[in-house]
Amino acid sequence: MRASDAERERVAETLREAVAEGRLEMDEFEQRLDAALTARTHGELVPLVRDLPARGAPVAGRAGASEGRPARIGGTPTSSGAFAFWGGFRRRGRWTVGPRFTAFAMWGGGEIDLREARFAERDVVIRCFTVMGGMHVTVPPDLDVRVDGVGVMGGFGERSEPGGDPDPAPDAPRVRITGFALMGGVGVERKRSAADERRQERDRLGKPDAGDGRKELG
Image (cartoon, rainbow, N blue to C red; front, side, top):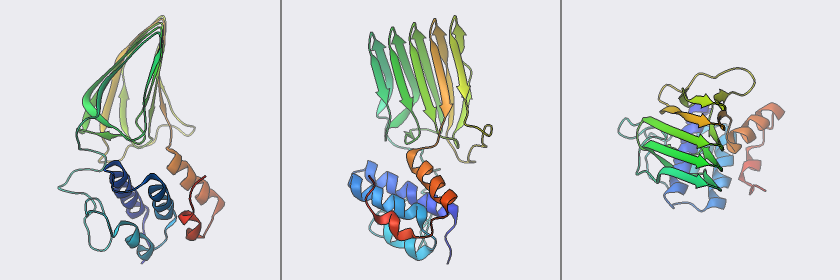
């Protein structure tokens, strides 16, 4: 049977959870993820999650979401704030955002990347404060994001990819980004993850060979 986009994405989310929990090594995760995103049938998807816990697996009779919780939501926060003074901070990769995350930068800068993040709760508030500094927040296109910060002799705003703001996924986390920038700036940018960009490029080129996805990424 042909696999749907939703099933491929649920398998990808299962793999992301597995590597975050230490069940998969990074090289094996990348190989399986690439294979999942290029899979055309259920038969190609099943082996990728056969040895992993049932949570999140959409094929072979297993449920897509566990206990009714949407993907990317749940877990223990790994960070609740960040601070930079005459320096910088970075929160990116696989991390779990607490329900309240506060970032401050003075004469410095910071980067907050939510594209591979999980969220302890569905409703999250990220507060960004900067004085003569800057912050950059990167969010995936399917995240439900609201930006309402204030810039004083500076800027606080959102920029989207060409084509306008996409519709968030129905079960996506709801993230409010607020705060203020004094003589500095806070920028929020919607951008696809590297895995999504690879998948989009494969679709654009029309590559039919799913076996290529099993090669280690460079």
